[in-house]
Image (cartoon, rainbow, N blue to C red; front, top):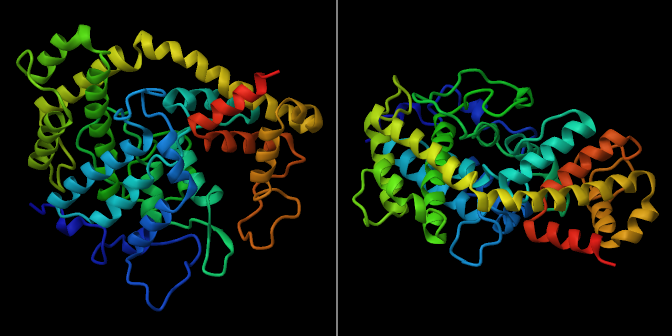
Length: 392
């Protein structure tokens, strides 16, 4: 236990001042008893972007079964797993909780398939790649606004340690012996997912917890939905289970966490045994082949693309012909302009203290605003706007 106690993100860490650094000083209260990361955590859960995750796809779109995982449930699972790992290793559980709770705050509607569509559109419109880790950083740095004690709207202004954990959390990797980087970099240097290692051990824990969570829960959900009925024999072999043995999150995740705790050290990094690492990668390959690329899920991606591109195209049309676009779907155009008024170069609410982000006379800026706006939508809202666009 507590193998990493000396490496924890606290006052004794040589990186401490960098870890708690904010873009601007945060207002102080005389009676505030929270730590820096507790303040981050409460700022995250009070944000609108966090609340919207309850209506965003994790893997399975619009399930009739209320017990199938959504994006916000996935976030809770990652927080639970990272808490367990951080606690048994002696790391800062407040820092891991804040990172884990915010790590997917930049996810688009319709999960990774929706992210792929927005990335393609962003590349065409203004030659940048959209990825949810970077969008998450932009959400907490620029887009999400909270009221201060005086009623002024300001950005979330989270600590560097949490911001770094958001953009560094990419779990779509196959690596063992994960260690944090030493360099205190400008996080705007990130151009691709997984470009740099996280800055703290706590962010490394969340990065691994993300992988553990989606491997376990996505399988148990697929079993519950009957997607793996034809593949259970192969799954039992991968998990070294007897046919008919219960497959659930508890059985899948506990052994992985225990193996990580046994094999990790500050010298070796966060490390799985060779056998467990091979099993994890085999499970990941199984998930992609049998779940993520299954015929059932691939069919619905055509619908995702139709919904998101229809919304995008109408908003693009509003740049040159607002009134014509508004005739087609006034709710969408009006809501977009209301959202945009928080960030544009025109007159705006004097209580809004965040920077001007978009020159709406510039088509690339306007297009960038459209992608940010769509990325914040819930699945249901995007579908509702699409239905209004096509309605006569």
